[in-house]
Length: 392
Image 1: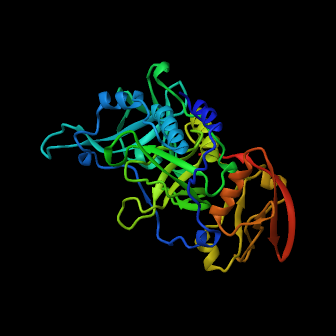
Image 2 (image 1 turned 135 degrees about the vertical axis):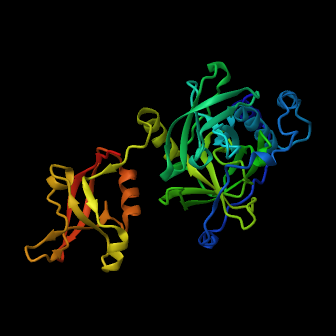
Image 3 (image 1 turned 60 degrees about the vertical axis):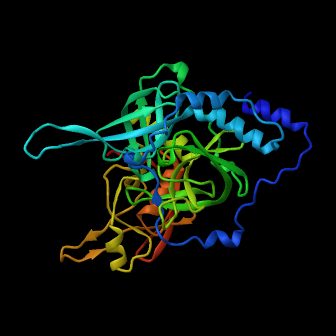
């Protein structure tokens, strides 16, 4: 029975089920300042020998549901049985020279993580840190069939990557995608992945907070991150976070834990970000970065000179910023340098560094006209500038 079928059958049953509560608003600001840790690239050596049991898995998927379970348990079972077919186990292989006195190179597993089927063309979405540093990748589907995976492209700034496998379309089941902008704190969520090498594992929790920030492998900030108390452990990275309808709402990416195991604080990249970037990766092999055709003064130099905002160092001739009349740092004949325009806000939202400016541009998107609040020689003004697609 599908998820929708289960939900319809449960609609006639008058059962009140408590599904947990989210964090109080006051508690949402008490998250420790330490960096969360990625949960992918689990060392393959720690995988239990009994982890891959295709016969048991197939039997469990078709086994009858016991009587007396609650309505929420029926929903969880239906979601898992349908969505688990889309979850992929990814093994990251690296080249290793086993003998210092030989040129022979062999491949060794570096680690493993999770992913999920994006479409019937064989595209699989995972975390960038799951595939990072690999030479070759293997993707194992729910039926235990394994395929070589080709790296299509990556988005390190958002900890996302796309692989492609040559698998029959009838064994590929893409997940239905939801919208992260519709999420609310307290709603039920489910995470499916391969923690500690144990494939097809389900954990259930609530959406604990929205609007978190997470440091990506490239050092950029991932914004609007989802926080959940559903257990996320090493090996879960790249797996899907689902709502109670089985829709994709995020990509599990990191945990906050002193021990490295789940401590009830997990993070997922929101599906709205994933849905925006994956089509760009499929077409261009990378995300398309929007900009206005300027070079910016490094944040370190701006702080050293007590500059508030984002200072323009130079303007690309003929670009959107040049056409809007923006100017960079100018140098007099005597060698003295004077600030040009300093960007203080984008569409009314203050920006204090490159990261905030880039995020504001990404949110608007290529082709949009943004209102920049700039300061030059003490004069504040607002100019409209069209965002262009930047090159590499």
